[in-house]
Length: 172
Image (cartoon, rainbow, N blue to C red; front, side):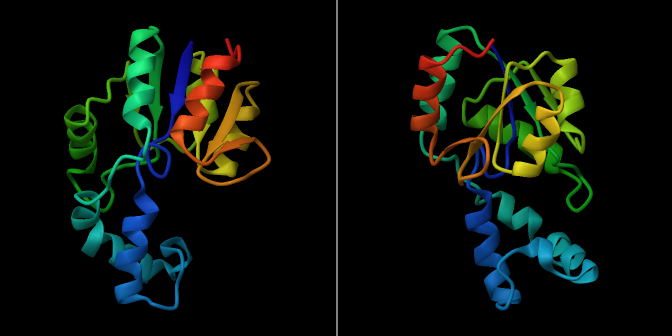
């Protein structure tokens, strides 16, 4: 099976860290993406390096990766991460994955059209936290699941539930 997997809020608990930083500087905002453009860019330029050092894996990620490795899954990581606000973000993302023992077959950065990339890689199942990304991937007739919150796709609150689903359901 070939899995396509996002990073932020899918593999990592990114929002938790970002919200803590946002609360200090912009207490009236719940989501940094709602900041006016100038403040958004300033916030990321100022805080991204520090925030990314605090990102943690979601519970169950390591167990899922162990299962994937033992069962010869192919992992394609497809992320919108780029070096726009931090010139070492891509390099440090690769290091973070390696340090945490998360192997992958390919990784794509700065991907706005995750569906096209997933289709090119013949992904069987795509895992992301954003419904809009899943909508894009679903256009390519790829099965999708949502991790972290409920949405119109099959949704899971954690990797333990998702792994049980993957073990039980044929996807390829």
